[in-house]
Image (cartoon, rainbow, N blue to C red; front, side, top):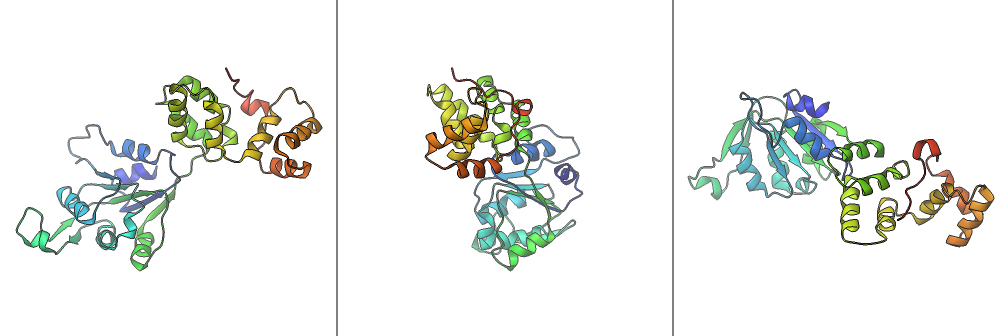
Length: 270
């Protein structure tokens, strides 16, 4: 909804924050039609991904002035004083803004002027944001801030639209409720491991999705049909981990509710 309103020009500055692998980039590109022909009366957005130098960004802003601007995955950008000083006027709201870069690079009479006006509205997409100084805090103060943190089930639903390895997808499906920070990158990692011929790709993927070995063990014991009683599960946990009965219950108390109806039987190994 926020990205759509940004694409419509109704938000001057949007700051989207969220952990990696949740589809922030995908949603932004869909909202702005990046990579697809847009309406004839709408100029394509300037979409900048990855690290960019301050003057390179200035050039792009000049070339695409008055277009929507999206700066994606630029967590280091706010640590560059030149970038932050440039973004401060660019991100001052809706309307005409003047951006300047007065150095030998623009005084030499080339194609890039030392200042220009633009009506571009801006979306910043990052995994984190640090208030390093007053200039950065000024950007925060002007922005509509959206925390993008979809639940694992929503990430899994997104993956269904493009992920083509059904075996890996079905395996992850059995663990969705147990992984609080599922990433779209887990699907790619699982596919690479499986196609590379690793027989233990499931174990490796589980450890990446939920590195906490104690929690992983308790969860698997809850789903083990050969251990129908809590006492049997506790004894098995102590045997496997060397930890105490108290640790078992402490770890279990931190897990999401485990239900056969919600997760079903865990995927079997081949």
